[in-house]
Image 1 (cartoon, rainbow, N blue to C red):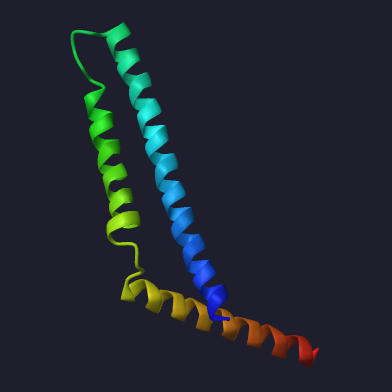
Image 2: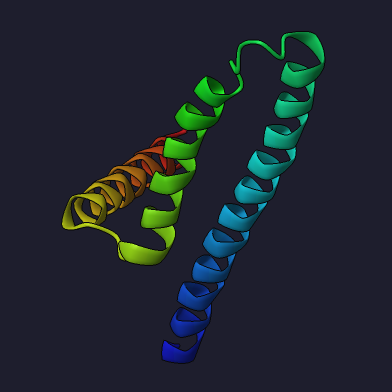
Length: 101
């Protein structure tokens, strides 16, 4: 059981890293595309920097969430527990309703 839990945690970390690297690759590809469009259409003003700065901030926060602060917060854990309890109550309620019919 413990081995399965460790596997699931490792799987989630790998998926989070893969998600970040995908995000970064798309950011880089679109950045090059925006730079090319900008230089071919209006080389006198470098507007490409504005979407890249905004999106870059998003990539930075994604990286922080994956590599610097990878653990779930206590708030997240409490929310998960609350949802699990809610789901259990709904399931129990549905089972009781089915039995009474």
